[in-house]
Length: 89
Image 1 (cartoon, rainbow, N blue to C red):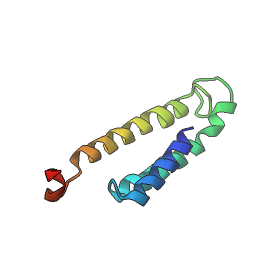
Image 2 (image 1 turned 135 degrees about the horizontal axis):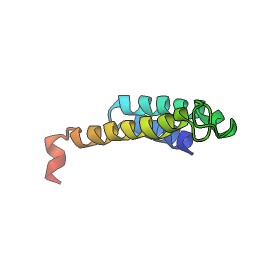
Image 3 (image 1 turned 120 degrees about the vertical axis):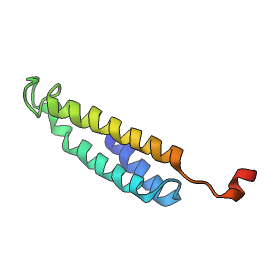
């Protein structure tokens, strides 16, 4: 699900130019990381291993990196400069 969201969001950002280009390209990168973590759902439940559904790799990759990326995109959205003409509407 996160891979689909990442690819769709990246495509929408690059196509609409609503946010900086780095947001779109980094969205594809995050989607690739999530795709690399898919095997962790099928390699057991030993939490000390990287590829485990509750392992440290899956938790760091799916939750940690995605949360940091979403925070960076939120800051980029808030810092986006608007042209003076668009503030008159």
